[in-house]
Each structure stands twice: as C-alpha cells, then as structure tokens.
Picture 1 (cartoon, rainbow, N blue to C red):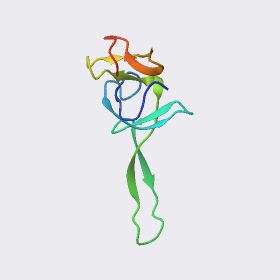
Picture 2 (cartoon, rainbow, N blue to C red):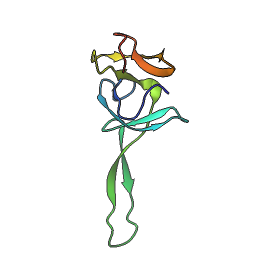
Picture 3 (cartoon, one colour):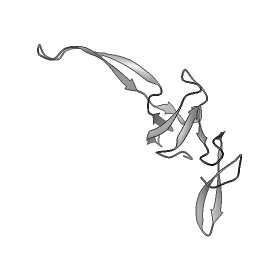
Length: 101
C-alpha cells in the first residue's frame, strides 16, 4: 500500500469526489482507508433500554484505496506515488515533481 496514515489525499471517484482530508486509519489487507469527514453515512440506533433514547448516528465508512490520490506536500497537486532506492532504503516520491514525500 503506497498511502499511509496522516497523508493528505483527494477523493477522485465516488459520491465525495473532489473532497480532501487526512487519512485516519488504514486497512492494508482490505485495501481500504478511512478519511475524516468523507464517506459519511447515517445509522438509526434503537433504544436499548427505557432510559437510553434512540438516535441517529453519523458513521465514517472506509473507502477503497484506488478512489483517492495522494496530494504532494511539495507541489500541492494530486499525484501517483512512486518509489526510489536511496542507500538501501525505499523512499516514496511524487510522480509529478519527482521530490521525496
């Protein structure tokens, strides 16, 4: 997975196309990510007891990784992620400007 927690991303597919945000959680086995205030759904919860009221809760559901693009911190454009080997370590690079992420 080329995207990590804390990266700034832009949604390029789906109902929230065009929105940007930081990644909160990553699920590498499922290739899904959770972004704050993106892909929100409402869930109706029934009252469990007489003292506890029923309510409508807003949930953030995971998005597929292929629906987002990383925003490069240097050139501030949505880009694909590449890799470069520098002295035995693997470094992520921006495909547009070529700088290290």
